Image 1 (cartoon, rainbow, N blue to C red):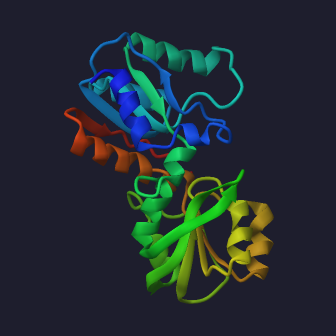
Image 2: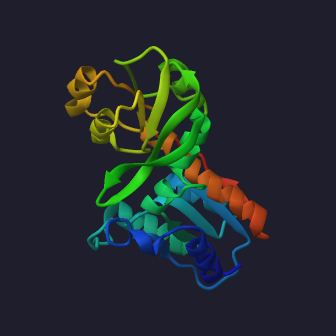
Length: 253
């Protein structure tokens, strides 16, 4: 597979163009290779030098990540960014990044993965962000305590950053938005949700969820956004004749 063919494949899979007006990430191909065939694709959450080194050592020709190198305005290629770019070019390693389209995807996305792990039945869109709902909510197949829910979504045994048991002992409804979506807890309260799951917490929402009697889990930004890249990886394994590998570089955050 060439990088261009892989780009077409990912664009058929994910709504990259549909988020262009609201996502500051430069979704899609961020760094090309020299035209060589890609015999192996690596998948990871973050575009960092450690991830690049491990992808190159594994023989990958393209690295697919959730958090890429470029966000909004052009950046000067200096410091750490220059080092990352230099490594990609020296090792002929292409970089492909998909941010919000991967969070939102109803089958392959981070939030769809979390909803499935938690047992949310018939999930419906939740969490308005610039006119688009990127998370999901619904009724849990089996009512869960907050600790039971935390165990279901733990990746690699990582404990959640924060567990806030301010609501019911058993949760019947749940909403999920991966990553840094602490303030969307207010939407969960407004919609009468029992349990809200996200990646990061924030000081400013503490009293909101306490007074709103909302159970909330801040499971970690990395831990809630590992699911989408793994699901895309599984789809590539099923549909493409190329080797794959997941590069696990947890931040603990």
